[in-house]
Amino acid sequence: MIKRWKVAAAAAVLGWVGSGLAQPSSTPYGMDDFARVPKFDAHVHANVDHPAFLEQARQDGFELMSINVDYPDFPSIADQHAAAIALAKADPARLHWAATFSMDGFGKPGWVDRVNAGLAEAKSEGARAVKIWKNVGMIEKDADGRLIMLDHPGLSPVAEQVHSLGLVLIGHQGEPHNCWLPLEQMTTDNDREYFRNHPQYHMYLHPDQPSYDDQIATRDRFVAAHPGLRFVGAHMGSLEYDVDRLGAFLDRFPDVTVDLAARMSQVQYQSLRDREKVRGFFIRYQDRLLYGTDLTVNPDTEPAEFRAAAHAVWTADWRYLATDGVQRVDTLDADVPGLALPREVIDKVYYRNAVRVFGTASRN
Image 1 (cartoon, rainbow, N blue to C red):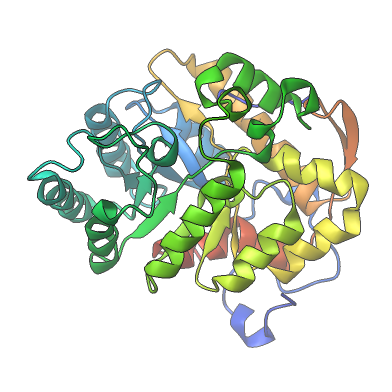
Image 2 (image 1 turned 180 degrees about the vertical axis):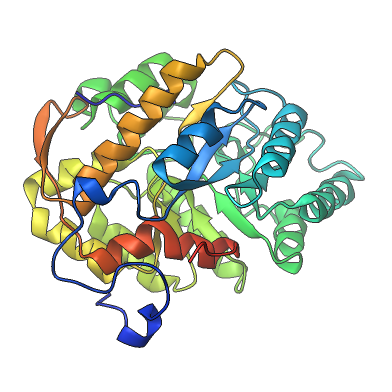
């Protein structure tokens, strides 16, 4: 029983020599390989300076990308920033982090200079990326009361600063496709639960707001307007419901990657209906996908409970992606067979892609 915490073809043989990862093989990994294979969770939120996340990551063989975000349910940006620096200092080879910025004062004199100075400082402190959250496009408004969308000209200088600093921009724009559906038509229980508890983000209830396709089109205009900017579409780029549409996005923007954070059940929903199509998607786009979960530690998190939950999520996802094992997935109320992806695909999705995208040092 799984419950989430609140949370191309084979590589050329020479590319694998001396890597320390398994050689390409038609035999998929098993559950007994989980702990020994290097892994990278590219989307977590270690929001407090507490060792629980690092302890579990060490036990299960993960590096982490802890992402600061301007989210009102999280500690302040300053507190998240301080926690990231402390945790990275405690284990710099395992904990990496992404900075963020506040939209407070957007459009007023000095806002761009203040934000860009903060990003430069974060880079000097070790940040690998910058997160821009869904408040852009869904919450924040300009002086005239209009929603600030990602392609607003006022955000271009920030994108240019991220690019010039050599950082990655992690963009969470829009929401799952389910967000624009009534609760009873949503495909997964986790989305039903989230939007029931966060009606302010349930766009079905707000028909005056931009549509799903408006959000996606805005994000695509932004990416097209900033060639060379390394962009990671968080949560499968909000195209989680359709691997064909996500593949078309990746084909259009060959420098973009996406993470899988908090969208595994959407992938599983599709693979229940056409396992080979979903498996083929992972193989075709094996260089463009980053494993991630959205696991979160906040001030009220109970450490032992979190560690058990993190291990359960990580092992369940490994069972689905790496093996052909069948497991019960509560959010779908279904038994879901695994994809048994080739080892070389798992090595990329789980580790090598993140090392390349974020510029961290490989453990191999």
